[in-house]
Length: 483
Image 1: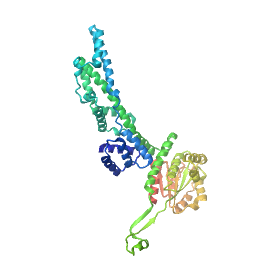
Image 2: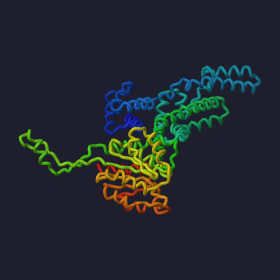
Image 3: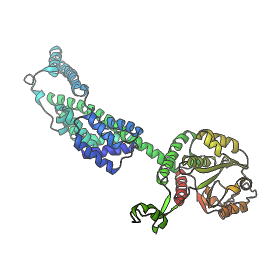
Image 4: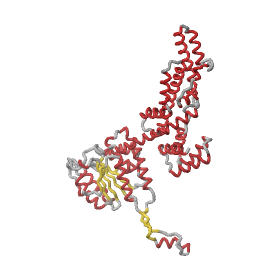
């Protein structure tokens, strides 16, 4: 049961329910207490231990019902459909024998009676039993043993590792082999090679049972795919979206990318949203310690150490939204505004030539509307980084101080205009950090109208940034340096 529970916990984690190792041990102890005879009681007990939020409880219910579903052989058709098939086979065999002997009417009647309900004394051939283990199991009609054999075979071949839907046939074959499908197939072939009617009838029966079993196995694999691989496949797609160049992402994938950005932001928030204090153990705060311990007549029961509070960063993001880099800017702004909990002081600016602030637009509109309006209002015109820097100096330089981080995202292609890199040097001298994110590879930074080499000299950090992974790393480093 412990192995089953571990697999269930893996399923919960795949469904984005956070289950720690300690909670897994609690679940094992819970099962020891409540047992597993009462399904509903077990479900409610595990839900208390393994799910925390209402969303997780809803996902838990779905996972539990799908995971602990053992109705693969519950329908009567699987075990009793062969009665009708045998009757038809008997009629066919009888007719064939009758035709061969010239007594078709008696042959047809006798064959039908024998297959549908005759006793072994009347037809000794019906006493022939299969020799393979799987054949014996199928002929026994034991649903519980069939279910156990199916689940154990699935565990043996690792069906929970299925990733894509096209693997369904592969895992179906593997499970059939693990249950003894090869031995059963050899037995059916051998029986078909005999001339006796008893072997023919048994081979036909076994073949029908095998075909129906294969259908059940295929259904089982499909359920395992939707239980395990559907979320795994989603995670795989997310990993691919993280690594693909943002300029290559199609518009129909923007929603998926936005979900990925939100998840990445939540991850960073969980890491950096704790109280930002750097405790210096070993440096005693005499004043606080004396004040705190006055109630104890000066006895040092409560020691206070010196602590330095670190302010959250003040971020100014300047994004080139011209056609060549608009997608990169879109997702940087999306990323920064998803981090509002740990980056509450973000000011955003967009430009092609003239610089404009879009902070209020993002604060009072939905993310999609704000993106669309920003691209519409500032995405037209010839790119002019010199004019952008001049506008920033005129309107925003007074707000820059030694706690400000300026992030510039753009390809630094200035259409051979004046780069005004001396203005960027002034920003460099006044702020805490200047970070330039360029979506182009480094080999292109000195080609054509690119001014990246000049701008890089006035930056604290220059990075190639053309994927979500790059964005996550840059923002993560930003938060790490101020935590």
